[in-house]
Length: 247
Image 1 (cartoon, helix red, strand yellow):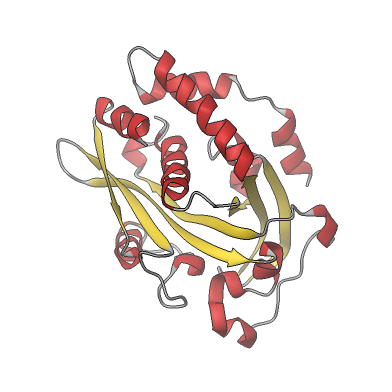
Image 2 (image 1 turned 180 degrees about the vertical axis):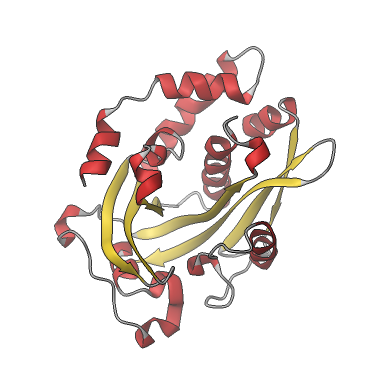
């Protein structure tokens, strides 16, 4: 967290973290008036507070304008795939009023994500600030902060739509180790048909990733995000991306 905060500052940004996720909802809707708020981190469907959620904002130092954000919710579950299939992840107690999701794969083809699961959502970077590493850094800061507050976090899992998965972003930008096709058809949360992927990374892999990313930051003498992201992507290989698209 210290390394990421310093990296942001050296690149012209500052950051803040809040436990009031309704602030993220308000900001996200102001910035994306035609966007869809991920119901999994929406206080309209879940009891969210300091014990199970937060959101992180990035500001430009000169204007104090928010130009990036991400939210995260912590979920205790014996079967995270079932949380998605049943729609409880998105709609909580109201999920029973909706038809369950039709999984695209058989259950044994998904990771056995269970225990305390972090679910990040609502990643946004302003158009003027894209392609400079903020998405890469926001995902990692959310992961690191969650591990700081909840060291027992077993998994971090998210969802990505097909255009994001096809570009390899779950691997080379978001830092997940798996990207499995979850649904190919109607997706209740967006009220549209999509290919939706389940992204995931286990606890031990998170720790290894943090060590690797920290070494990249420490080896970069200029401490600029763009340079570090370039180095990080050079470590990536193409096969995982092809596997995600094939899935």
